[in-house]
Amino acid sequence: MPEPKYWHLKTVLSEALDSEFAVGEILPNERDLAARFGVARATLRQALEQLELEGRLQRRRGVGTTVAPPRMGVAVGSAQGTWPGAAGDAWQPADSELAPAPADVARALGVDPDEPVHTVRRTRVSHGQPVAAELLYVPAASVPDLSAIDAPIGPARARAVLRELGRLDLEGQDRAVELGSARADDAKALDRLPGAPVLVVTTRFLADGGTAALSMATYRADTCRLTFGDQGAVEIHHGPEQQAS
Amino acid sequence: MPEPKYWHLKTVLSEALDSEFAVGEILPNERDLAARFGVARATLRQALEQLELEGRLQRRRGVGTTVAPPRMGVAVGSAQGTWPGAAGDAWQPADSELAPAPADVARALGVDPDEPVHTVRRTRVSHGQPVAAELLYVPAASVPDLSAIDAPIGPARARAVLRELGRLDLEGQDRAVELGSARADDAKALDRLPGAPVLVVTTRFLADGGTAALSMATYRADTCRLTFGDQGAVEIHHGPEQQAS
Image (cartoon, rainbow over all chains, first blue to last red; front, top):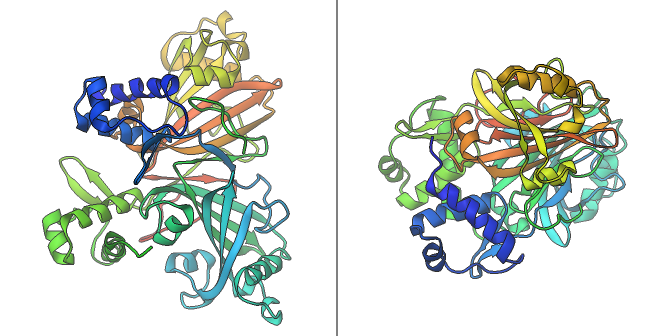
Protein backbone atom coordinates (compact mmCIF):
# COMPACT_ATOMS: atom_id res chain seq x y z
CA MET A 1 0.00 0.00 0.00
CA PRO A 2 1.74 3.23 -1.08
CA GLU A 3 1.62 6.15 1.36
CA PRO A 4 -1.31 8.31 0.34
CA LYS A 5 -0.51 11.91 -0.60
CA TYR A 6 -2.16 13.44 2.45
CA TRP A 7 -0.08 11.22 4.67
CA HIS A 8 3.16 12.66 3.39
CA LEU A 9 1.64 16.13 3.64
CA LYS A 10 0.68 15.41 7.24
CA THR A 11 4.32 14.70 8.13
CA VAL A 12 5.49 17.88 6.40
CA LEU A 13 2.75 19.92 8.09
CA SER A 14 3.56 18.39 11.45
CA GLU A 15 7.19 19.48 11.14
CA ALA A 16 6.09 22.98 10.10
CA LEU A 17 3.87 23.14 13.21
CA ASP A 18 6.87 22.27 15.41
CA SER A 19 9.23 24.78 13.86
CA GLU A 20 7.13 27.72 12.74
CA PHE A 21 4.01 27.95 14.88
CA ALA A 22 3.34 28.58 18.54
CA VAL A 23 0.59 26.91 20.56
CA GLY A 24 -2.68 28.79 20.04
CA GLU A 25 -1.56 30.39 16.81
CA ILE A 26 -4.14 30.45 14.02
CA LEU A 27 -3.11 28.63 10.84
CA PRO A 28 -3.35 30.37 7.45
CA ASN A 29 -6.56 29.59 5.58
CA GLU A 30 -6.93 26.38 3.55
CA ARG A 31 -6.41 28.10 0.20
CA ASP A 32 -3.09 29.63 1.28
CA LEU A 33 -1.89 26.43 2.94
CA ALA A 34 -2.78 24.33 -0.11
CA ALA A 35 -0.88 26.78 -2.34
CA ARG A 36 2.15 26.80 -0.06
CA PHE A 37 2.46 23.00 0.02
CA GLY A 38 1.43 22.56 -3.61
CA VAL A 39 -1.52 20.23 -2.93
CA ALA A 40 -5.23 20.16 -3.72
CA ARG A 41 -7.52 21.51 -1.03
CA ALA A 42 -9.14 18.08 -0.57
CA THR A 43 -5.70 16.60 0.19
CA LEU A 44 -4.96 19.41 2.62
CA ARG A 45 -8.27 18.91 4.38
CA GLN A 46 -7.56 15.17 4.89
CA ALA A 47 -4.18 15.96 6.42
CA LEU A 48 -5.73 18.57 8.72
CA GLU A 49 -8.34 16.03 9.84
CA GLN A 50 -5.61 13.52 10.76
CA LEU A 51 -3.68 16.15 12.72
CA GLU A 52 -6.89 17.00 14.54
CA LEU A 53 -7.43 13.30 15.42
CA GLU A 54 -3.90 13.21 16.82
CA GLY A 55 -4.50 16.30 18.93
CA ARG A 56 -2.05 18.56 17.09
CA LEU A 57 -4.70 20.93 15.75
CA GLN A 58 -7.98 22.26 17.06
CA ARG A 59 -10.76 23.48 14.83
CA ARG A 60 -13.04 25.96 16.50
CA ARG A 61 -16.05 27.57 14.94
CA GLY A 62 -15.60 31.29 14.41
CA VAL A 63 -11.90 31.08 15.22
CA GLY A 64 -10.39 28.79 12.61
CA THR A 65 -7.74 26.12 12.97
CA THR A 66 -5.27 26.67 15.79
CA VAL A 67 -2.18 24.83 16.98
CA ALA A 68 -3.21 22.72 19.98
CA PRO A 69 -1.26 22.56 23.22
CA PRO A 70 0.14 19.10 24.06
CA ARG A 71 -2.53 16.80 25.41
CA MET A 72 -2.98 16.75 29.17
CA GLY A 73 -2.17 13.55 31.00
CA VAL A 74 -5.30 12.73 33.01
CA ALA A 75 -4.94 9.97 35.59
CA VAL A 76 -7.72 7.36 35.44
CA GLY A 77 -7.96 5.70 38.82
CA SER A 78 -5.20 3.81 40.57
CA ALA A 79 -4.29 0.15 40.32
CA GLN A 80 -5.73 -0.78 43.71
CA GLY A 81 -8.80 1.44 43.39
CA THR A 82 -10.90 3.58 45.66
CA TRP A 83 -14.59 4.46 45.74
CA PRO A 84 -15.76 7.49 43.76
CA GLY A 85 -15.73 10.47 46.11
CA ALA A 86 -12.81 9.20 48.21
CA ALA A 87 -10.15 11.67 49.36
CA GLY A 88 -8.16 13.01 46.41
CA ASP A 89 -10.92 12.28 43.89
CA ALA A 90 -10.64 14.70 40.97
CA TRP A 91 -14.39 14.71 40.25
CA GLN A 92 -16.96 17.31 41.30
CA PRO A 93 -20.49 16.03 42.01
CA ALA A 94 -23.02 18.16 40.16
CA ASP A 95 -26.37 16.46 40.57
CA SER A 96 -28.19 13.25 41.41
CA GLU A 97 -31.51 11.71 40.50
CA LEU A 98 -33.31 8.45 41.20
CA ALA A 99 -34.63 6.93 37.97
CA PRO A 100 -34.50 3.73 35.91
CA ALA A 101 -31.11 3.30 34.19
CA PRO A 102 -30.65 2.64 30.47
CA ALA A 103 -31.30 -1.02 29.60
CA ASP A 104 -27.62 -1.91 29.08
CA VAL A 105 -26.61 -0.31 32.40
CA ALA A 106 -29.42 -2.10 34.29
CA ARG A 107 -28.22 -5.38 32.78
CA ALA A 108 -24.61 -4.74 33.88
CA LEU A 109 -25.78 -3.79 37.38
CA GLY A 110 -27.99 -6.86 37.59
CA VAL A 111 -31.10 -4.83 38.43
CA ASP A 112 -34.57 -4.85 36.90
CA PRO A 113 -34.92 -2.56 33.85
CA ASP A 114 -37.55 -0.43 35.61
CA GLU A 115 -35.92 -0.42 39.05
CA PRO A 116 -34.87 3.13 40.05
CA VAL A 117 -31.11 3.65 40.29
CA HIS A 118 -29.26 6.63 41.79
CA THR A 119 -27.63 8.47 38.91
CA VAL A 120 -24.91 10.85 40.05
CA ARG A 121 -23.63 13.30 37.47
CA ARG A 122 -20.07 14.51 38.02
CA THR A 123 -17.61 16.63 36.08
CA ARG A 124 -13.86 16.77 36.07
CA VAL A 125 -11.76 19.88 35.49
CA SER A 126 -8.02 19.94 34.80
CA HIS A 127 -5.94 23.06 34.27
CA GLY A 128 -9.13 25.11 34.33
CA GLN A 129 -10.72 23.16 31.48
CA PRO A 130 -13.54 20.61 31.60
CA VAL A 131 -11.99 17.29 30.61
CA ALA A 132 -14.63 14.72 31.45
CA ALA A 133 -18.29 14.18 32.34
CA GLU A 134 -19.48 11.13 34.24
CA LEU A 135 -22.67 9.29 34.99
CA LEU A 136 -22.26 7.11 38.06
CA TYR A 137 -25.03 4.54 38.52
CA VAL A 138 -25.63 3.28 42.06
CA PRO A 139 -28.44 0.76 42.68
CA ALA A 140 -30.58 1.61 45.71
CA ALA A 141 -29.50 -1.71 47.25
CA SER A 142 -25.87 -0.48 47.38
CA VAL A 143 -26.81 2.46 49.61
CA PRO A 144 -29.61 1.04 51.81
CA ASP A 145 -29.30 3.70 54.51
CA LEU A 146 -29.62 6.61 52.11
CA SER A 147 -33.39 6.83 52.28
CA ALA A 148 -33.15 7.35 56.03
CA ILE A 149 -31.17 10.53 55.44
CA ASP A 150 -32.88 13.83 54.81
CA ALA A 151 -30.90 14.31 51.59
CA PRO A 152 -31.62 17.46 49.65
CA ILE A 153 -31.47 17.64 45.87
CA GLY A 154 -28.49 18.67 43.71
CA PRO A 155 -24.81 18.35 44.61
CA ALA A 156 -25.58 17.72 48.30
CA ARG A 157 -27.73 14.74 47.34
CA ALA A 158 -24.95 13.49 45.06
CA ARG A 159 -22.45 13.74 47.92
CA ALA A 160 -24.81 11.81 50.20
CA VAL A 161 -24.98 8.95 47.67
CA LEU A 162 -21.16 8.91 47.39
CA ARG A 163 -20.76 8.97 51.16
CA GLU A 164 -23.06 5.98 51.61
CA LEU A 165 -21.37 4.12 48.76
CA GLY A 166 -18.00 4.68 50.47
CA ARG A 167 -19.21 2.68 53.50
CA LEU A 168 -19.09 -0.53 51.45
CA ASP A 169 -16.03 -2.72 51.31
CA LEU A 170 -14.53 -2.30 47.80
CA GLU A 171 -13.54 -5.75 46.56
CA GLY A 172 -12.18 -4.73 43.19
CA GLN A 173 -12.80 -2.81 40.04
CA ASP A 174 -12.31 -3.24 36.36
CA ARG A 175 -12.26 -0.79 33.58
CA ALA A 176 -12.67 -0.54 29.82
CA VAL A 177 -11.79 2.26 27.40
CA GLU A 178 -13.33 2.68 23.98
CA LEU A 179 -13.99 5.26 21.31
CA GLY A 180 -17.38 6.97 21.34
CA SER A 181 -19.16 10.10 20.27
CA ALA A 182 -20.27 12.83 22.67
CA ARG A 183 -23.95 12.84 23.66
CA ALA A 184 -25.58 16.27 23.57
CA ASP A 185 -25.50 16.69 27.38
CA ASP A 186 -21.87 15.60 27.69
CA ALA A 187 -20.88 17.72 24.69
CA LYS A 188 -22.33 20.75 26.44
CA ALA A 189 -20.47 20.01 29.69
CA LEU A 190 -17.23 19.46 27.76
CA ASP A 191 -17.58 22.50 25.49
CA ARG A 192 -17.61 20.35 22.37
CA LEU A 193 -20.10 19.76 19.57
CA PRO A 194 -22.43 16.74 19.91
CA GLY A 195 -20.94 13.76 18.07
CA ALA A 196 -17.31 14.80 18.68
CA PRO A 197 -14.98 11.82 19.26
CA VAL A 198 -14.61 11.01 22.95
CA LEU A 199 -12.93 8.31 25.03
CA VAL A 200 -15.52 6.44 27.08
CA VAL A 201 -14.20 4.86 30.29
CA THR A 202 -16.50 2.32 31.91
CA THR A 203 -15.60 1.30 35.47
CA ARG A 204 -17.32 -1.40 37.45
CA PHE A 205 -16.97 -1.27 41.24
CA LEU A 206 -17.36 -4.62 42.96
CA ALA A 207 -18.60 -5.21 46.50
CA ASP A 208 -20.50 -7.97 48.30
CA GLY A 209 -19.85 -10.29 45.35
CA GLY A 210 -21.65 -8.07 42.84
CA THR A 211 -21.49 -4.79 40.97
CA ALA A 212 -22.14 -2.06 43.54
CA ALA A 213 -21.75 0.87 41.14
CA LEU A 214 -21.00 1.54 37.51
CA SER A 215 -19.32 4.66 36.14
CA MET A 216 -19.51 5.78 32.53
CA ALA A 217 -17.07 8.66 32.05
CA THR A 218 -16.69 10.57 28.81
CA TYR A 219 -13.29 12.20 28.28
CA ARG A 220 -12.43 14.77 25.63
CA ALA A 221 -10.37 12.85 23.09
CA ASP A 222 -8.83 16.00 21.63
CA THR A 223 -7.20 17.36 24.78
CA CYS A 224 -6.71 14.28 27.01
CA ARG A 225 -4.41 11.31 27.17
CA LEU A 226 -5.60 8.89 29.81
CA THR A 227 -2.88 7.63 32.13
CA PHE A 228 -2.95 4.40 34.12
CA GLY A 229 -0.76 3.20 36.94
CA ASP A 230 0.64 4.90 39.99
CA GLN A 231 3.98 5.94 38.55
CA GLY A 232 2.82 9.04 36.68
CA ALA A 233 2.26 9.72 33.02
CA VAL A 234 4.35 8.41 30.16
CA GLU A 235 5.86 11.42 28.50
CA ILE A 236 5.71 10.64 24.83
CA HIS A 237 4.47 13.49 22.73
CA HIS A 238 5.29 15.75 19.84
CA GLY A 239 6.28 19.38 20.15
CA PRO A 240 6.87 21.32 23.35
CA GLU A 241 6.92 19.88 26.85
CA GLN A 242 3.76 18.24 28.15
CA GLN A 243 1.77 19.83 30.92
CA ALA A 244 1.88 18.01 34.22
CA SER A 245 -1.17 15.99 35.13
CA MET B 1 -28.07 23.50 23.25
CA PRO B 2 -30.99 21.71 21.53
CA GLU B 3 -30.38 18.14 20.35
CA PRO B 4 -29.32 18.33 16.73
CA LYS B 5 -31.51 16.52 14.21
CA TYR B 6 -28.95 13.82 13.42
CA TRP B 7 -28.67 13.03 17.11
CA HIS B 8 -32.32 12.11 17.37
CA LEU B 9 -32.01 10.18 14.13
CA LYS B 10 -29.02 8.33 15.57
CA THR B 11 -31.15 7.11 18.49
CA VAL B 12 -33.94 6.00 16.17
CA LEU B 13 -31.47 4.28 13.84
CA SER B 14 -29.77 2.59 16.78
CA GLU B 15 -33.08 1.11 17.91
CA ALA B 16 -33.80 -0.05 14.36
CA LEU B 17 -30.40 -1.77 14.26
CA ASP B 18 -31.23 -3.65 17.48
CA SER B 19 -34.67 -4.77 16.40
CA GLU B 20 -34.53 -5.24 12.63
CA PHE B 21 -30.98 -6.06 11.57
CA ALA B 22 -28.58 -8.90 12.23
CA VAL B 23 -24.82 -8.54 12.68
CA GLY B 24 -23.13 -8.40 9.29
CA GLU B 25 -26.29 -7.40 7.46
CA ILE B 26 -25.87 -4.70 4.81
CA LEU B 27 -27.92 -1.54 5.40
CA PRO B 28 -30.13 -0.16 2.63
CA ASN B 29 -28.46 2.61 0.63
CA GLU B 30 -28.39 6.19 1.91
CA ARG B 31 -31.16 7.37 -0.40
CA ASP B 32 -33.59 4.68 0.82
CA LEU B 33 -32.66 5.17 4.48
CA ALA B 34 -33.06 8.96 4.23
CA ALA B 35 -36.49 8.47 2.64
CA ARG B 36 -37.57 5.94 5.26
CA PHE B 37 -36.66 8.22 8.19
CA GLY B 38 -37.78 11.41 6.43
CA VAL B 39 -34.43 13.23 6.73
CA ALA B 40 -31.98 14.88 4.36
CA ARG B 41 -29.09 12.74 3.20
CA ALA B 42 -26.57 15.04 4.93
CA THR B 43 -28.38 14.46 8.25
CA LEU B 44 -28.43 10.72 7.64
CA ARG B 45 -24.72 10.70 6.85
CA GLN B 46 -23.90 12.50 10.13
CA ALA B 47 -25.90 9.94 12.09
CA LEU B 48 -24.17 7.07 10.29
CA GLU B 49 -20.78 8.61 11.09
CA GLN B 50 -21.66 8.76 14.80
CA LEU B 51 -22.80 5.14 14.80
CA GLU B 52 -19.54 4.21 13.12
CA LEU B 53 -17.54 6.07 15.83
CA GLU B 54 -19.47 4.10 18.45
CA GLY B 55 -18.71 0.80 16.76
CA ARG B 56 -22.30 0.00 15.77
CA LEU B 57 -21.70 0.22 12.02
CA GLN B 58 -18.80 -0.64 9.75
CA ARG B 59 -18.28 1.01 6.40
CA ARG B 60 -16.28 -1.12 4.01
CA ARG B 61 -15.29 -0.16 0.54
CA GLY B 62 -16.99 -2.26 -2.11
CA VAL B 63 -19.37 -3.76 0.47
CA GLY B 64 -21.33 -0.86 1.90
CA THR B 65 -22.41 -0.19 5.46
CA THR B 66 -22.91 -3.26 7.61
CA VAL B 67 -24.09 -3.85 11.16
CA ALA B 68 -20.99 -4.37 13.31
CA PRO B 69 -20.62 -7.18 15.83
CA PRO B 70 -20.20 -6.01 19.46
CA ARG B 71 -16.69 -4.74 20.14
CA MET B 72 -14.21 -7.28 21.43
CA GLY B 73 -12.86 -6.79 24.93
CA VAL B 74 -9.07 -6.82 24.54
CA ALA B 75 -7.08 -7.02 27.77
CA VAL B 76 -4.27 -4.44 28.00
CA GLY B 77 -1.67 -5.74 30.43
CA SER B 78 -2.27 -6.61 34.04
CA ALA B 79 -2.06 -4.39 37.08
CA GLN B 80 1.25 -5.79 38.28
CA GLY B 81 2.78 -6.07 34.83
CA THR B 82 5.09 -8.46 33.02
CA TRP B 83 7.71 -8.00 30.31
CA PRO B 84 6.62 -8.16 26.69
CA GLY B 85 7.07 -11.73 25.49
CA ALA B 86 6.39 -13.28 28.91
CA ALA B 87 4.28 -16.43 29.11
CA GLY B 88 0.67 -15.75 28.12
CA ASP B 89 1.58 -12.68 26.06
CA ALA B 90 -1.01 -12.20 23.29
CA TRP B 91 1.47 -10.62 20.87
CA GLN B 92 3.30 -12.27 17.97
CA PRO B 93 6.78 -10.94 17.15
CA ALA B 94 7.04 -10.21 13.43
CA ASP B 95 10.34 -8.46 12.92
CA SER B 96 13.15 -6.49 14.53
CA GLU B 97 15.64 -3.89 13.37
CA LEU B 98 18.35 -1.80 14.99
CA ALA B 99 17.99 1.86 14.02
CA PRO B 100 17.63 5.31 15.56
CA ALA B 101 14.18 5.82 17.10
CA PRO B 102 11.88 8.78 16.34
CA ALA B 103 12.96 11.90 18.25
CA ASP B 104 10.10 11.77 20.77
CA VAL B 105 10.75 8.09 21.52
CA ALA B 106 14.50 8.69 21.97
CA ARG B 107 13.68 11.50 24.41
CA ALA B 108 11.34 9.24 26.43
CA LEU B 109 13.97 6.48 26.52
CA GLY B 110 16.65 8.92 27.54
CA VAL B 111 18.95 7.95 24.66
CA ASP B 112 20.73 10.07 22.08
CA PRO B 113 18.61 10.90 19.02
CA ASP B 114 21.02 9.07 16.69
CA GLU B 115 21.71 6.11 18.99
CA PRO B 116 20.45 2.85 17.45
CA VAL B 117 17.55 1.24 19.31
CA HIS B 118 16.11 -2.26 18.83
CA THR B 119 12.68 -1.85 17.28
CA VAL B 120 10.55 -4.96 17.57
CA ARG B 121 7.37 -5.05 15.52
CA ARG B 122 4.62 -7.23 16.88
CA THR B 123 1.00 -7.90 16.00
CA ARG B 124 -1.91 -9.07 18.02
CA VAL B 125 -4.76 -11.22 16.75
CA SER B 126 -8.04 -11.84 18.58
CA HIS B 127 -10.86 -14.07 17.32
CA GLY B 128 -8.97 -14.47 14.07
CA GLN B 129 -8.81 -10.74 13.38
CA PRO B 130 -5.82 -8.40 13.64
CA VAL B 131 -6.62 -6.03 16.52
CA ALA B 132 -3.36 -4.24 17.19
CA ALA B 133 0.11 -3.48 15.84
CA GLU B 134 3.00 -2.57 18.13
CA LEU B 135 6.42 -1.00 17.92
CA LEU B 136 8.47 -1.95 20.96
CA TYR B 137 11.61 0.17 21.40
CA VAL B 138 14.46 -1.39 23.40
CA PRO B 139 17.71 0.57 23.84
CA ALA B 140 20.82 -1.52 23.24
CA ALA B 141 21.84 -0.82 26.86
CA SER B 142 18.76 -2.75 28.09
CA VAL B 143 19.92 -5.94 26.35
CA PRO B 144 23.72 -5.81 26.65
CA ASP B 145 24.23 -9.52 25.98
CA LEU B 146 22.29 -9.56 22.74
CA SER B 147 25.21 -8.70 20.50
CA ALA B 148 27.02 -11.80 21.74
CA ILE B 149 24.26 -13.97 20.37
CA ASP B 150 24.23 -15.09 16.78
CA ALA B 151 20.75 -13.64 16.32
CA PRO B 152 19.25 -14.06 12.88
CA ILE B 153 16.94 -11.52 11.32
CA GLY B 154 13.13 -11.48 11.38
CA PRO B 155 10.89 -13.02 14.06
CA ALA B 156 13.76 -15.04 15.58
CA ARG B 157 15.75 -11.84 16.09
CA ALA B 158 12.67 -10.22 17.65
CA ARG B 159 12.30 -13.16 20.04
CA ALA B 160 15.97 -12.88 21.00
CA VAL B 161 15.50 -9.20 21.94
CA LEU B 162 12.43 -10.08 24.04
CA ARG B 163 14.23 -12.96 25.73
CA GLU B 164 17.13 -10.72 26.74
CA LEU B 165 14.75 -7.98 27.90
CA GLY B 166 12.99 -10.54 30.10
CA ARG B 167 16.21 -11.08 32.08
CA LEU B 168 15.89 -7.62 33.62
CA ASP B 169 14.08 -7.02 36.88
CA LEU B 170 10.81 -5.22 36.01
CA GLU B 171 10.34 -2.43 38.56
CA GLY B 172 7.08 -1.05 37.26
CA GLN B 173 5.20 0.15 34.27
CA ASP B 174 2.86 2.94 33.37
CA ARG B 175 0.52 3.37 30.52
CA ALA B 176 -1.34 6.03 28.58
CA VAL B 177 -4.22 5.74 26.12
CA GLU B 178 -5.09 8.37 23.55
CA LEU B 179 -6.85 8.84 20.25
CA GLY B 180 -4.72 8.72 17.11
CA SER B 181 -4.86 8.01 13.41
CA ALA B 182 -3.42 4.88 11.80
CA ARG B 183 -0.03 5.25 10.09
CA ALA B 184 0.18 3.60 6.67
CA ASP B 185 2.15 0.57 7.95
CA ASP B 186 -0.16 0.00 10.93
CA ALA B 187 -3.22 0.52 8.74
CA LYS B 188 -2.00 -2.24 6.46
CA ALA B 189 -1.39 -4.63 9.37
CA LEU B 190 -4.82 -3.82 10.81
CA ASP B 191 -6.72 -4.02 7.53
CA ARG B 192 -7.85 -0.41 7.80
CA LEU B 193 -7.33 2.70 5.68
CA PRO B 194 -4.46 5.03 6.65
CA GLY B 195 -5.77 7.78 8.90
CA ALA B 196 -8.54 5.66 10.45
CA PRO B 197 -9.15 6.45 14.13
CA VAL B 198 -7.13 4.19 16.43
CA LEU B 199 -6.44 3.93 20.15
CA VAL B 200 -2.74 4.39 20.86
CA VAL B 201 -1.49 2.71 24.04
CA THR B 202 1.95 3.83 25.20
CA THR B 203 3.56 1.66 27.89
CA ARG B 204 6.81 2.45 29.64
CA PHE B 205 8.66 -0.47 31.26
CA LEU B 206 10.90 0.54 34.14
CA ALA B 207 14.05 -1.25 35.29
CA ASP B 208 17.33 -0.22 36.90
CA GLY B 209 15.84 3.17 37.74
CA GLY B 210 15.14 4.09 34.12
CA THR B 211 13.01 3.29 31.11
CA ALA B 212 14.18 -0.09 29.80
CA ALA B 213 11.65 -0.33 26.97
CA LEU B 214 8.82 1.62 25.45
CA SER B 215 5.84 0.14 23.64
CA MET B 216 3.60 2.07 21.26
CA ALA B 217 0.63 -0.13 20.40
CA THR B 218 -2.06 0.88 17.93
CA TYR B 219 -5.45 -0.77 18.48
CA ARG B 220 -8.36 -0.74 16.05
CA ALA B 221 -10.83 1.69 17.56
CA ASP B 222 -13.76 0.31 15.60
CA THR B 223 -13.63 -3.29 16.82
CA CYS B 224 -11.84 -3.08 20.20
CA ARG B 225 -12.65 -1.99 23.70
CA LEU B 226 -9.52 -2.00 25.83
CA THR B 227 -9.94 -3.65 29.22
CA PHE B 228 -7.83 -3.02 32.29
CA GLY B 229 -7.58 -4.93 35.53
CA ASP B 230 -7.41 -8.59 36.35
CA GLN B 231 -11.09 -9.17 36.95
CA GLY B 232 -12.19 -9.45 33.34
CA ALA B 233 -14.03 -7.11 31.04
CA VAL B 234 -16.87 -4.82 32.00
CA GLU B 235 -19.87 -5.98 30.04
CA ILE B 236 -21.62 -2.80 29.03
CA HIS B 237 -22.69 -2.70 25.44
CA HIS B 238 -25.59 -2.23 23.14
CA GLY B 239 -27.26 -4.97 21.21
CA PRO B 240 -26.52 -8.68 21.39
CA GLU B 241 -24.19 -10.35 23.87
CA GLN B 242 -20.52 -9.36 23.80
CA GLN B 243 -17.88 -11.83 22.72
CA ALA B 244 -15.62 -13.07 25.48
CA SER B 245 -12.15 -11.55 25.69
